[in-house]
Amino acid sequence: MKKRVKVVGAVAFNERGEILCALRSSTMSHPNLWEFPGGKIEEGELPQESLVREIKEELDCTVNVYELIEDTIYEYENVIVNLLTYKTKITEGKPKAREHAELKWVPLQDLHSLEWAPADISTVDILLADTLIETE
Image (cartoon, rainbow, N blue to C red; front, top):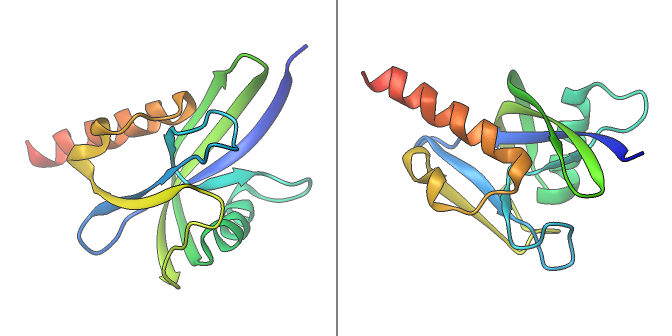
């Protein structure tokens, strides 16, 4: 039976409406794919608490966590990932790539130009669909 992992991802917007994207390093599983920064939910943590902790550890920033964007399950070769992505805003610090190969702020409409980790794609699709609704 495959291992199940529950993880959180931060969709962090800046004042220009760009989204912080993180490139998985060559030492991570699914290397060189883009993702929303975040990580595993620890025992007894609320998803929002996990996200605040993970962003502090990974990016050396403090975030406020807002609404849930997507709750998706993706089955990889050897693990089943339940990814919860939340809209967030960095309130303290400048993101530093402590674990990722690269971080970059990407305009919403350019998200599809990146090669995303499969579990993150449904969040990208939702974000782009929301943009279409707002601009019509």
